[in-house]
Amino acid sequence: MHAPPRVRPIERTDYDGWRPLWDGYNAFYGRSGATALPEPITAATWERFFTASEPVRALVAVHGSDIVGLVHYLFHRSTTRLHDVCYLQDLFTVESQRGQGIGRALIVAVYEAARAAGCSRVYWQTHMSNIAGRTLYDKVAEHKGFIVYAREL
Image (cartoon, rainbow, N blue to C red):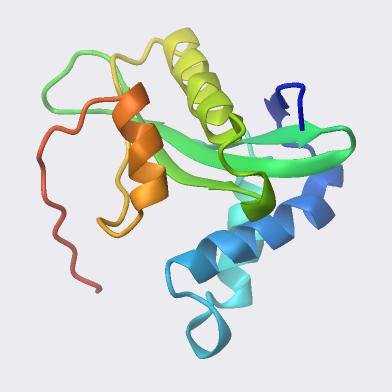
């Protein structure tokens, strides 16, 4: 791929191109086979992209007619800022095309969307083992040193 990808909002007709990337993203984080997300979660996630009252948004990177990357993000309030912040929740690119600027283009597009929405910060998390992703993230953002804790309820 020589030309940079075109990044645009996801469309309903993108499902067949989005779904393999969504499944690949989840598999990367160990959610496949017996541990796969239940189908109702995927269906709800998909519908949220097209529901105006939902804060979840999605963009795709397109090369030709192929979807080669996805990013999901949402805006929310913060107790330490006057303006909303943007959480970049999911980022995934086609494995065979990594290192060609797709991830960077998607992140920059989220920066632009957040800026347009009046957000004061974009942030995200990744697993410490995601060396390839962290190599890119270190170039486009600052690691603030936080450690994430979670508890399933």
